[in-house]
Length: 116
Image 1: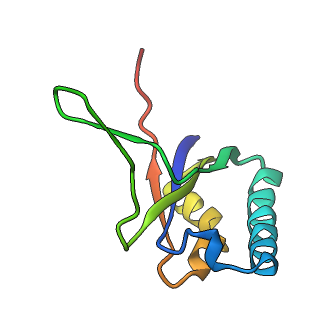
Image 2: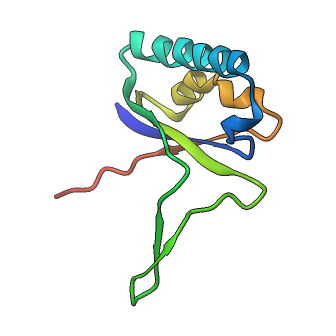
Image 3: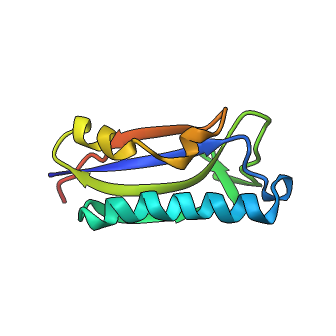
């Protein structure tokens, strides 16, 4: 069985643009979708991400504030799940609330197992 990473992206990540009722409804949809995957024993971990952070780059390890959303998209959260194949992992992606957003995307990647 392989592990897969789902990255949830959207430019509509600012909760200040939504009413309390819209936020509660969205959280309920997320809870139902994630709960369904957990009930199947396929979920390893899932968390939303805070918008702030630091970006480290270059051989001199330059640290800057960010990442910042630049109009298009930001990573709002992730899930790590188990599946027998990428096709099965794609089936788990169906119904993800991020896909209800006009600019919402879900990036699915198999996690490479490294030998230690």
